[in-house]
Amino acid sequence: MEKSTWLATPNIAVVKYWGKRDSFLNLPDNGSVSVTMDEALKTITTVEFDERLESDLLVLNGRRASAEETARAKKVLDAIRKKAGIFAGARIFSRNNFPTAAGIASSASGFAALACAASDAAGLSPSKRELSIFARLGSGSACRSVFGGFVEWKRGSRQDGSDSYAVQIAPADHWKEIRNVIAITNPERKKIGSARGMEITSRTSKLYPQRVRLAPKVIRMMKRAIRKRELETFLLLTMRESSHLHAVMLDSFPPIIYLNDISRQIMDAVLGYNEARDEICAGYTFDAGPNAHVYTTQKHAGEVRRLLSEIEGVRQTIVCKVGRGPRKLGSSEALF
Ligand code: DP6
Image 1 (cartoon, rainbow, N blue to C red):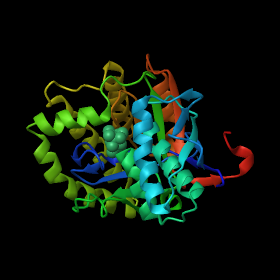
Image 2 (cartoon, rainbow, N blue to C red):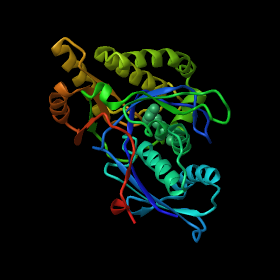
Image 3 (tube, protein in one colour):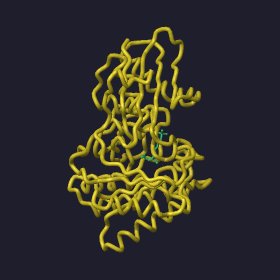
Image 4 (cartoon, protein in one colour):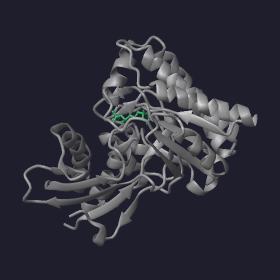
């Protein structure tokens, strides 16, 4: 069988996924909305199925992956093997150009790249919907990275997950002025992984059921803001939704706190920037970590970047555009 190499990029949610109704299939309690990033951040993955391999071999950034990481990849690979009717083990090499698990969603680009490369290497030509479902089995948020542009992950209601996948709201060109200025405050691996954090929140937070109930309305408003390119609404909803997520995290027991003093200074700086201009032209959002994603437009991205880099403790800033989604690379770019 041929090997296949794909590139995928992360996505950063503006309506977040946080809580599962099925933790094996990664089925969410609520839908979510995200923007796929361009290739400023990327994962490249090569996959080859080989009858001689007794089990899957996964190498991440030059190192043999842990048993847990390999087991997550196996969920994606098993679904693809079943569909293709093959039994061979897989050899997978994957590389990120950004700090893994620093709250910049390396699992999203990683599992999207794996779903694309492994399906292709298995000889399948899956629909985007199928690819999204394969990617979701590795990491929920990865199901959104199989599309470029602005993306919705539909919650679905079936137990087998066949109606829980991502769809594109609008392509990258629809609103190409949008930028995400990422401020990395801490490149370390997070203390509480997303899966564990979600489990604690959904089991213990009294505010959580309210979040799940509100989600469909927030998603409707967010999709409308994106379709109409209403910047102020898009940014306000993004900031409010980020705070809502971190409120239910804090309301969990034991409390889950991903934000730190630097994150709070970033929030103040962005609010001050908007106030000084008397318009909402930047909006922060934080995932399961202290690093900030500040959505803004091309016009303001330079200033916002300077503003964030001046904050003590911000170690690196990266400016992303809206990306076009995964693409296949040639054999000269294969990782083995
Ligand atoms: C805060 O997709 O990493 O970034 O499904 O357990 O792999 P698993 O979780 P993951 O969670 C992402 C959580 C988030 C919000 C989001 O991206 O929607």
